[in-house]
Each structure stands twice: as structure tokens, then as C-alpha cells.
Image (cartoon, rainbow, N blue to C red; front, side):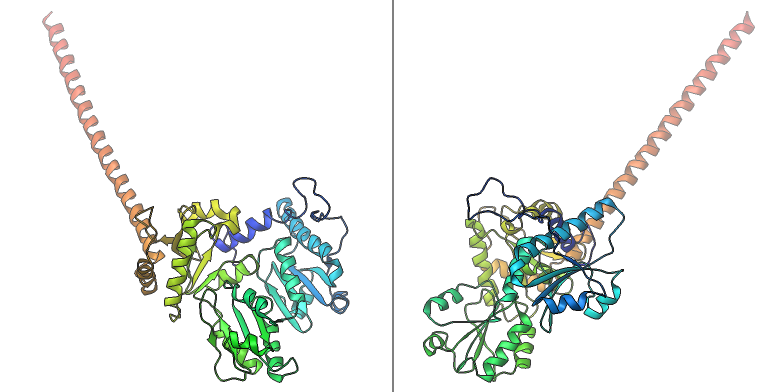
Length: 443
């Protein structure tokens, strides 16, 4: 998971804030619901197992999938105990909802059950691991009941979805926010389709795989027999994987190499994996509400720039729709000092959340594609970076120190003047006393 540097680390903020606030959203409906719209409420039955050295093999054999939370030892602090209980409650609710799906749930204590953790290959505390057949899938998303339920249901599906007709192809073409692969094969018994399916299992459910055995569908996709196309998010044209047919290893190697898109959306199901995939400690981050007219326009400009510059290996932009993470809006606005009611784009340091944002002089007009491209070139060249922001802060601190020194000097001068005045007054008083003494002598 994301390194804990609370409260400065953005990834940690995301993890802790959502972990504390979201688990109970699925437990209680706001108003009495009609039949058919009754949200599940935890029924009080314990379904999450305490996994240890005595029962882990039985649990592995009993279920088709086993979902385990690897956690720190239960703390003494009441506040931390409450957080632990809330985390467990998320698992309990998901276990209840998916009770008929043959999925087991358990928790592994990092200290008490260290031997089991080592045997199972659990190495990241506060992570969720899913065991399915001979695979181990790490859940890198938002720890909420809704997100985890959707993730596990996706894992239950076949790793490859088959496109049989024009309507299914139309739905495929609308999935422009996700990485997709599609191949054309003779039939499901084809050895090349089998290799494609084996590769799909390595990336399920994060990357979508599609296949067709229909010549009419393949023609619309401009696919030849045993050919596979790779679709990057928001790109208009796919990349054909060279040198068909492909083995499982060749497909996995190509996908791994090209997995980081030029433009990608931050999604609840893999948000931490995305945030950890930075380039030299920074992300180019764009905030834009897709449902807002300005946000939509800015996003279209962003897509245009991404398409024109997808050949640049160091260009990767993370698009965040604030509507998807509304509880984080106050934190982001405070941390980054930006107004998220308007589109924004900036550079964020993932270590300390330092950031620099593109200046948009005219609040009415959004930057053009060329202006945005010029700014991105400055970022990639290092002309725009968060270190400059640190230096400016240091300069401000130095200026403040200088002002303090000046104030101290002025105070010292004032004190000196006051001392001089006091000396003069003392001299005058002594003179007056001498005069009085002389008068007394005369008398």
C-alpha cells in the first residue's frame, strides 16, 4: 500500500480518510425503502475468519476464492481499535453480501500469525490479498464495501469476454477510460486463444480482455486471424501487437511494458496502484468534473494533447474527477491551494504533496491545446517543478527572517535613543540638585 506519511502523504490521506468514513455507507438507508431497493445491513453474524496456522489450509480448500486482510497487531489504543473494528466491519458486510458466491474472508495478524503470512507470501501490512486457484491478486483500491464487492464479482467472471455482434462491439467502443485488449481467433479451442486467456488471468480484473470468433465483428475491428490489438485509454486508434501469433509470455511482456497510459483516470478500484506508479516521484495531475461544461471542455483538450504526445515515454497524466472523491475535495483544496470548482492541472510530489499548478490568467477561458502542451513540455524538461516551489518558500522564510532582523535593529535603535534621553534627563536632574545646594549655601 501507499507509504504512511500522515497527514502530508496524499496516498495515506486517501487511505485513512476513506477507510474511516466509507465503511458504513452501505449499512443504513436514509429513508425506508420499497421492496427491491433495500440496502444490506450487517446482520451481526460473524463470517470473517481469524486465520492461523491451524485453519488456513482448510479455508484455502473450502472456498473457490479466499480474501484475506493482512493487518497490524490489534493496538491498545481505543481509537486505533475502533479503526480496526471498522475495517473488519467492511469485510463482514462484503462477506454477508457475497455469502452465496463461495468466497471466504479472513484476517491475518502480522505478529501473531507471522508464520502463516510468510507461507502465503503476505508482505504488505494493511493490504487485501485474494487467492484464486494458483493466483494471488492484491487489491489496491478503496477499502469500502461497494468497491471491494465489485472487485470480487469481476474476479468471478471469465477473464475474457466474447464479442458476438455489433451491439456488443458498440459497448466495447464506449469503454474508452480503460485499457482493453481484443483478439480474433478461430474458436475457443484454438491454442492461440488459450494463450490469450492465460495472459488475461494475469491482469484480471484490472485490464479488460475481449475476443471474437466472428468474421463480421473482426472486420469492423480490422483484425486478422490470431491478431491482438491493445487499446490505451482515451486513444482513438489501437496498437496492434506485432509478430502474431503470440504466446502467453509475449502478451504479458507487451502489456507490462505498455501498461502506463499517457492519460488515465483515478479509479476507486485501483487508486493506490495508480498513485504508486509515479515517474521520478511526481505525477502530473488534472482535476476536471466531466459533468461540468468547463470540466468536459478541459478534458477534451487534455485528451487531444495526450493523443498528440502519446509517443513521449515520460508523459503520464492522472485525471481526477472530483465528483468521484467528494470527501477529499476540502483536503485537496487546502493542500494544493486550488479551486476545484474549476479545471486545474499541476505537478504533485508524491512524497510530501508539494505542488505547482498551471497559471490560468483568464478565469473565463480555458488554456488552448497548444498552451497546455507548452506547459507540459516545461514540466518534462524540468523547467516547472515542485523544487522551485520549495525554494520560493525558503526565500519567503528568509525574507521574513530579514524583516525580523530589521525590526530587531529598529527596536535596538529605539532602545538606544531611550537610553540617551534617560541620560539627558538624569544630567538635568543632577544640575538642578546642584543649583538647589548652592542656594542653600547662600542662605
